[in-house]
Length: 346
Ligand code: KG4
Ligand code: ZN
Image (cartoon, rainbow, N blue to C red):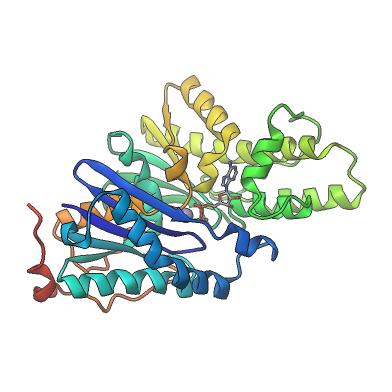
């Protein structure tokens, strides 16, 4: 089944074509330049820019896949969690295409997309431990299979990506800041500043990044002193430590042989090295999606959506956008026979 997938949950406009042979195309139009001057994402600007770019992005995804809408057999779109105004743009365009073409449509949870992104590149046996670490989320899940997710822990305050972005802002490094900090930290002194590592009394698989953010602010108010690259390396090292500890505790307790790290922060080079080392010391395999599938993209939505469509799931065209959406909750609406009849999958 060839699926057109659309993702507009935050500030990236993305479309992809995914079929049984894998990812045929994956196009992402970044809005970084639009939001950089505000030091964060401005929701209304994000929605308005999705409106401008969504159709050209879909057209490019079709061209790069060497297909037309006539070759598409199903449509998938992210319907939550995310910025509602942003989600609505991609969701409505996807539903419009499904309606016009009489194609089956399914809504995909953005978090499910991230957790399954690794499967675009390689098979991983279930169950695996999924660490989802992005700008909006930092959570640990047991991934028992497609559609079977159990949350073990989550951040009590900021997401790790948010901590990176706020630190970059404090250091005058622009927005979003994770990648810049990552780059500046290469070859810098990771032991220049000893930032605190949060330890939580309850919730052994939970995370907290507000303390380190405050510690950085205080360090800078006190006059700083260390080169910016050393501040970045020290800050990054503390975040990496705080991501590794609960993840390894969970892997030990559950006995899952594989840890899969996903979401924008999984692109962090230091996290990739350290988590892999920490895992291998305990005989665990650690897997990361390729860089392009770490940050927001529609290929991961295509993978999850295709699996759901192949499993017979259909969503009504009344499916709405959801700002908060727990993963694993069934949202299957009544099957619309008119749409189901458009399903040409085998
Ligand atoms: O998954 P994503 O693209 O969007 C959300 O769903 O949030 O993640 C974006 C986040 C941002 O906070 C960004 O700073 C962070 O991922 N990020 C990184 C790196 N690349 C992106 N953080 C640390 N190191 C990186 N190399
Ligand atoms: Zn994301």
